[in-house]
Image (cartoon, rainbow, N blue to C red; front, side):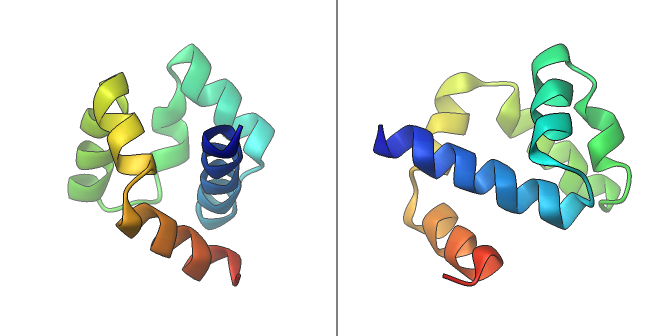
Length: 78
């Protein structure tokens, strides 16, 4: 349950940073059109994120890392 909450919190923070809603971002991630959400990111960062998100194990490892948790706290103001 905690892992789901962490993922949702990161999705919420990422959506806010990308200027979209969590629902739209999740739909884009699920249907493979999330490139639209990355259009405002520098191309090198967008490529790294795309590569990381394409591998489920890498994505899980990243989301559970202390760095991701610190980033969540910073972006969410908690």
